[in-house]
Structure formats: structure tokens, C-alpha cells
Image (cartoon, rainbow, N blue to C red; front, side, top):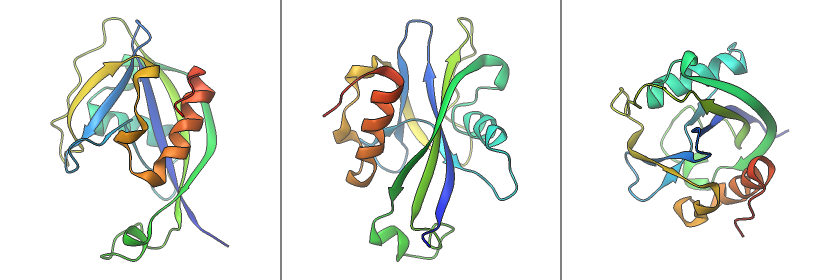
Length: 156
């Protein structure tokens, strides 16, 4: 049976309805949502709070979770599964739960400088402005489904 790594992802939305996308620090031109793995024994909601704080510097008082949906899966390409040893080698891919996080009007500034650094910059866009070309091919199907499920946007 294939083993998928449990993962959480945050769809951070501002009061104007724009979504936050962040450019990967080590992969220029690759934009994504804040996300990360769920540690062994960690509750999924706690993983979400931890990942948002670690990656963009927002504490749980800065946003409200209004919706969530899980079961989104993607398979890692061979270079990840069979590459240099890492925590990902024992998994075939990730199974993600997405959370719609509405930031408060007066939320603090984002902090992308936290270590280990995940992102080089961020921007707020309308959901229909998201480009699948920003992603590696193996993640695109999940992002298409997420954008349709949460925002009614067809990216294809």
C-alpha cells in the first residue's frame, strides 16, 4: 500500500479577497501557498498554525479558518523519492488538507525571513490570476482542484 505524507496548506485570503502566494527561496519563479508536513503525533490543526507561523510569521490571532478540505494527493517524481536521503524518501507523495484562512483587516506584516527560510517574496493576487506554470508539473492537478473547490476558478 502506498504511503502518503500528511501535509497542510494555507489559502491565506485578505479582506479584499486576494490570496497570498509566495515564491520559493531556493526555486525562483516557483510560487505556491504556505504549506508543510504534519509531524508524527501532531494534530492537523496544530500543524497548520505551526506552518503559517514558521513560513510567513502570522500567529493564529491574525486569521480565522473558515473552511477546510482534505484528500488532495500528488505523487513525488522519482528524483524526490529516489534522490538523496531525506524524510520524503519513505513516501510515494503527499496527501494535503487545505485550510481557507481569512486574515484580519489589521493583521501584522508578513515575515518571510524566519529560519529555515522557505520564501524569498510574497504577493497578493486575485484567485484567477494564479498560474499553473508557477508549479512543478506533479503539483498542478492538485492546485487546479483546490482553486476550483475553494474559489470556483478554473485554471485549465
